[in-house]
Length: 188
Image (cartoon, rainbow, N blue to C red; front, side):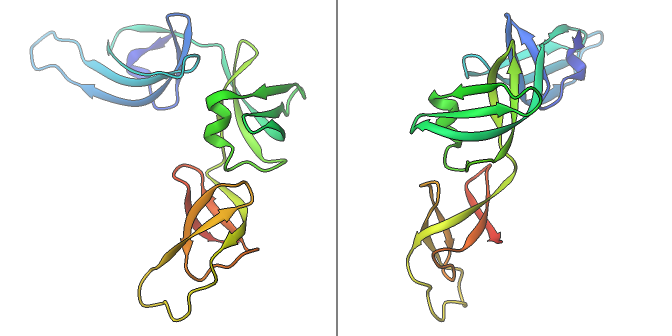
C-alpha cells in the first residue's frame, strides 16, 4: 500500500485494476481547521495511454502496482509500425507496435539500450535514454560566415527523423539528440 502523501513523479500505483504512472503532483493545504491536505495528481493510465487527473486526501491508501522497470534492448524493426525489444534479464522478446513504437522510432537504432516498463508480463512503457547518438545522413551544405547569428537548418538523421541543427553541420557527422524534445545537443 502507498499513502497518497507519498506519491511522487514516476511512482506507479494501481487504480481501477490498471497501472497508473504519476506525471505531475501538487499539494494543497486546507484553510479550515480539521481539513485534510489534498494531493492533486496528473497521471497516465499505462494500459489505455490516457492522461487523467485525480485528487486524493493525504491519508488515502493506494494499491501498489506489480510494475517493474527492466533493462531492455532494441533488436530490429518488423515494419514501420512495429519493433522487437528484448528484456536483458531473461532474454524474452516483445513485439511493440501502435502508438508506443511510433513515439520513439525516430530515436532508436539497433542495439539501443532502453528501460522497459513491465506489468503482468506485458510491456506497457519504453523509456529512452535522455540522449542518443545519431548520424546525419542528409543536410544542406555548411553555411559560410554565419557565426554572427545562430542559424539553423533541417537535417535528416539515420532513423528518418528530421530536426533542426546548427548551420555548420554537414552530412555524415554523428550528433547527440535530446530524446525528450527532439533537440540537437552537440557533435559527438
